[in-house]
Length: 370
Image (cartoon, rainbow, N blue to C red):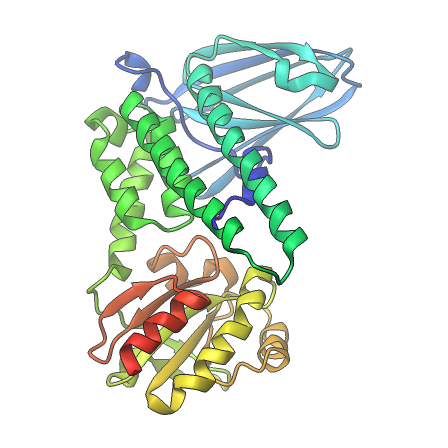
């Protein structure tokens, strides 16, 4: 299935970040500059309003007091960024801010989607993408509901629907990047769709379609770096790493040369990972005696939870972790942005496949061993 569930990331303050610019204009310059935001929101109670974004992996936050629905922010931006505004306890909206802009927001607290935002030169490009993404998300929701109603029955129609939706997503991103090749928003969209949920080929081809201006926006640079990182686990690459096992002893991946190895990034707290584990257990039981091995790389930060999940799911293979969670050095080096993520290494230590799950993994192993 497609990775379409994490739609809330566009609405929550810690994830709405850098982007957006209008095509062929000086607004793409990534120069540091001041900005201001003034809001007039009917129905907004007095209290705190929060502004946040991410830049260079860090959360940037600010807050101000709203009085009679009015609030103001002043700050300095390193370039074009998308900020998340939190009004009240759970109401969010996103605003694109570029250096030297004076942004005005006017609307109703109960209808923030219809708020009027002026002075934000790149806002319309961002909203254009959100509209396209919303249509994809809504249909994905329909397919997920259909899958839930089917349960363990014949899922061929649902699977076909997701396959078609995935192609639609790819076409939508391609067209958007072609339309705005100098936009930081285009870089963000490529990152969000093809780096966070790995599709290295599409990430690379869309990055190549960006202009030099687009590549030099904040998110264009981040995208370029992410593509360079992902190349470390590309097809044909020979990865190697050393991490502590459950007993604290160093394990080296290359020590398994001569075996087919699935390197599986997971965590005890990851629901999709735990749901996939029975498929791995089945594959391991069927092919381990033929030379198949699994190395589970956990992004846990609590050893007890990690070991408990291993026992509960009966994961009788090799396990390693530096117990640093998302701050794991290996996850950073390999650009792991979502889990489960995996790559399959052949007997010579080369990556021959990535992110094989369920039936896809079974077919690949059958082709190797049968």
